[in-house]
Length: 449
Ligand code: 2IT
Image (cartoon, rainbow, N blue to C red; front, top):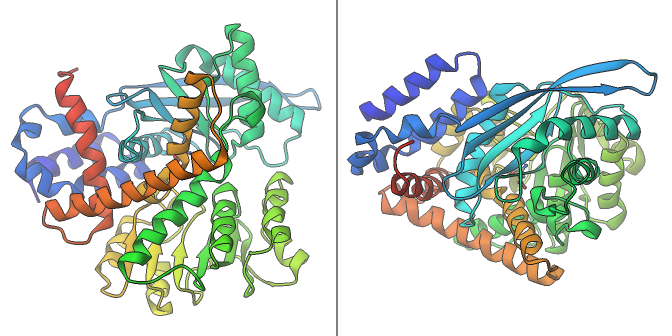
């Protein structure tokens, strides 16, 4: 391997030994940049890569909140402003008990490349808390969000850093967060957050955008193989906002999602999650806070497999859309045995590096990376920012059209970037290279700091 690249990866491994998820994403991304670094000695000359793997800044703050029974609780909050070279920091907030700096940094690093790929002016950021929303009442969630924003508001702003949702943070939480921001600032600066409700500046199609974008990207991959999405079966994971959007768009286009998963196992619905009743039920399941996919099996009388993952079920397309490191080597082997031809990552870093490499080596499988496939979410967030700053509202058709175009462009840019560097049809390396190029150009132009 290129000696400079190897030394940067080594630095990160040493410095972040207690943050394996961050090491994992840095290793995955930097490895695929090898031909670029080989051909561009100017990056090594100014040690660009060690700057790229170091967040510009990161805040840690205390978040205290009162439970309904009057007891007080203390959590930790974080916001990582990873890279602002091409625009205000942009990225979601994740509320989940396993959140710690390693998760926030991995997500912030991925976000930097993903946001660059959208072609829109957004830098990379991420934040969250180790707060567990499961089983919390609506008033507990509101008090937590208000307290979180009391700490966060001084670091963000429409031209500074624009958070959004991620796991555990949906439209309800964004509403409470924005209400507190508005109260503190005494101004209607709604461009400070995206994923807002439509009544106070949210964008049409933002709720569906990640899932729709993933399907638009998938259509490009299928077209390359001379295939169409109609009649295809899809295995998804999770049952949150992203999976919901995939089910909805796939159903519109005549395909069907046949698996969903949760922490309790997975369900197999041979008819597909295709009717309005089934698709709407996903929203209800998520809102219930129970976090159990078995509810779907109980309601619609389909098979539930406790404690298992859906990888290995016979389908045409695999879309891991739940969370990081959902697919390890063991699941990757099952996927290969199942004969699926398309492995389309959707969640952030859903595949371990060894499993990803293994899948990419299989001649019969086409692999697409999440930072391209799920970029429609944040791209539509950027469209929300544009509408907020222009003080106007675009129609559903307008937003959807732009989202569709952006996804087509992301796909094409990835294809072209890999080809330019002699890597053939490699969507994974192509996305990393294309995402890197724009941030690198901007950093080089702005001088060293
Ligand atoms: O992972 C992601 O891209 C998000 N959670 C959405 C970020 C955003 O700012 O819309």
